[in-house]
Length: 157
Image 1 (cartoon, rainbow, N blue to C red):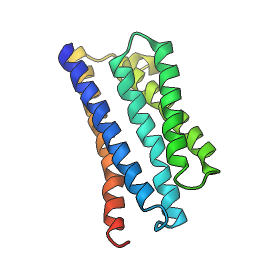
Image 2: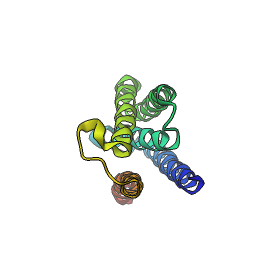
Image 3: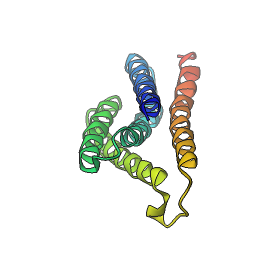
Image 4: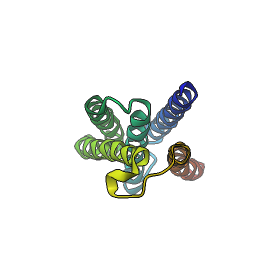
């Protein structure tokens, strides 16, 4: 049990680190990026919030009401910060996308831990642990992919 908590905590920290690195890079290159590229990179808030919400749910599965409030607040902050990269007016749109991503991440975490919520067949506990690791790792790779595309495009700037 303690091992799984440490794994989820490290995945949450890796996800946060990727988000901070992407934000710093985007903030540095903000003037050189085109509007369409800034909008595309501003949508990273949804992915980051989804991964954060899912990993927070895996860390604290007992306190559902606390998890929802926490993921809404964290997702809203992530979205507002990333939305401010585009234009100050886009902060509200980023906030919305961050909140929706956080809520979706929480719901995805709930379905991964208890598949019968969606009338899916129940799984063996070992299979649930494997699915948790699979989806958490997939979320990290989902965050790394736009980062690689951004850094590749950033070389031409």
